Length: 185
Image 1: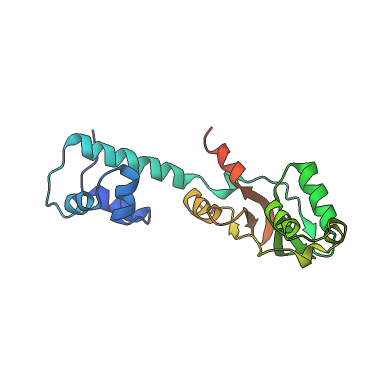
Image 2: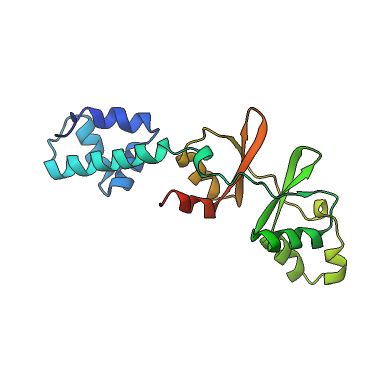
């Protein structure tokens, strides 16, 4: 048995979704969602079931948190170390990016893309490899708490190589796009 139709709006808002985004997730029109919520239309069982199935799926994804998908060991590099060491660390651990530290603070990041972009500019490899990481680093990865929901993580990873996860101010892990495969289990 399906929940009452009035639940659609309530559950949509609890997920922080607009009518348009819910419609896109469910494969229906935004105007249909608006008409259902305003009781201007009496939808078929099939449409209502499709919307509730979609809401349930989104709610399930929202229950997954950063703590459940992070990689606990954070491999990093210090700002004063050489680019050649960053490359060795990435190769050794199979990572394509590293956070950059100054003491105990994240101050930036370095990635294969950053390195390849620098090399493609025609710089001599011997000079480039001896540069300090701080000379080529990019912005720091976003930092979230261990309770951050999967929906936020997905949004952040659209524009970032990784996310740092903290608990009570202490770093407990890192999340990359590869970690999202843990959700698909």
